[in-house]
Image 1 (cartoon, rainbow, N blue to C red):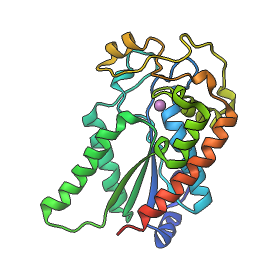
Image 2: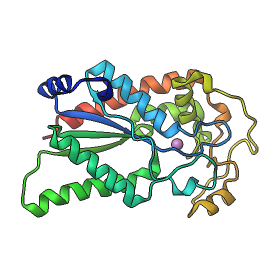
Image 3: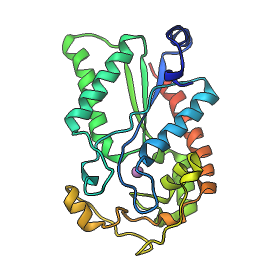
Length: 246
Ligand code: NI
């Protein structure tokens, strides 16, 4: 169930049944020669929408722009500064809490968001702690690519060639959501180099086509369908466990 497609009385009715919500969060950034700029938002969104349909869970609008400073050497990438993302997350959490939600589960598709998301969670909790209040608010971050079923499947499908950016897994899942976007591109070298990075210029110098450690030429819509099924199972299981925490 998507929040954007409900009326406010329908949201109030949902809150009688549950005070939990999924918030897909991603990024808008290059994903190598054959991956979509929207990959990191599309992946958590498609999993959250399917989990929401299957299990009567409300899904907030996708936060499609994240912290992606290191990708700015490639056209089409957009970043929020960490401080901007932190302010945005804090405002969203406080808005949802103000209207009755207590359990907010961020379904994340982008590693670059993780540090800032945890900082935002601490910032929100600090307000209650400093005020000496006991808040019912519970916050969780789940990276779709870290679920146990997804990890095992990615390993089985692609092994080490899955890589760490523009992975064969994420490209497959985004193609499953948008099959018309599939394209064949020859990768040179087949598997991209691995390592770290600092700023956008450094990233572009080390990883000229945008990939890190991956061979997304192995991606397919069929693999995406399997990852989708595994990802929805992982998400529903983790969300249910989270809801059960007080
Ligand atoms: Ni990605």
